Length: 235
Image (tube, rainbow, N blue to C red; front, side):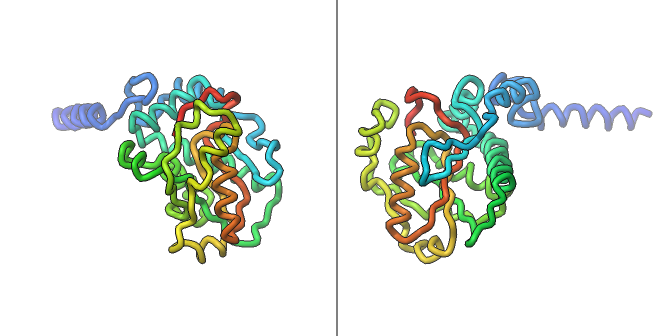
């Protein structure tokens, strides 16, 4: 009896140390988000994940960039809570999978996920590229080809949140280039770009144009959140 109680106590103590905390409310939680906060975040999920404003680029977003989802992305992106990438990336992968099934799309070539890159200086400052982490977890769901360094950011740009649509396009001009070591591989695929937030579409369009100029097929972009206004955070 004593041994059984000792084992039970040991397991309870161990569970306390191993249990993490919710990224939003900080309450004890075995997952990155507790049940209550997860419910709040899901309220931001879009009924229609496809933005039909861009005829040459399919835009798929999991939710609206507001309230709890905005907080989650902020904790992930600026406070380095990388464990959130698993849930966000998996949800994004399921959203894409549902889109593919609904549209009955049959790919002519393998699907490749290419994250929107950070400039090396920004990468060094942050320590990780949030788009790449999202793409890694998304790819576990969609089982495509992850080409994490397919695009390179070769020019540092001004923070996007303070600019209008036209200024954003100009700001991003010649900001990207295709990694020459991945060119042949990319040309054998259909690319889906991956990012955390979609605002005016300037970043996605410039990235897609850069790839297409090199003879690479680009289907669209998948993002965790779609901003409904220009009041957004910078990359």
